Amino acid sequence: MKEYMQRYKFNGDYRLRVVFQRELSKVVNEQKADLIVPIPVTSTTMQTRGFNQVIGLLREVPYQLILQTKISSKVAQSSKTKEERLATKQPFILDAPEKVINKKVLLVDDVYTTGRTLYHAANLFKQAGCKEIGSVSLAR
Image (cartoon, rainbow, N blue to C red):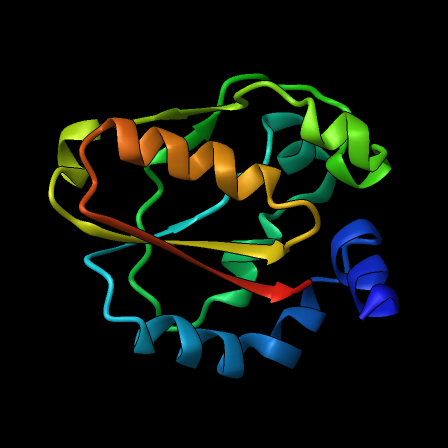
């Protein structure tokens, strides 16, 4: 999995998205969420990589892009120590928070390491009045 992520995510081999697309999309769709929200990348990452690796893994999944990063440039989570990850401040903003009130939201990410990214995202949805928050990650 480490080699896969290196090639897909960090080397930008977008063709590799299809390796896990079917399986991940099936699991995501089985969750029966009202809103499926992929974890976003920064604008710097998008310019460098050219794609959001989480969205690339979703096939025939009706996701909503209502979570955005607050900053355009940051140190990649993958280059931080566990302690640095856990100390990370809220990196996200929620567009249209009224859309999540009393909804079941499913957050989708590629890698779960410390859980801090999902914690930050879930916290925003909880504050906005979300009824239930779940998550699915490709790897841990």
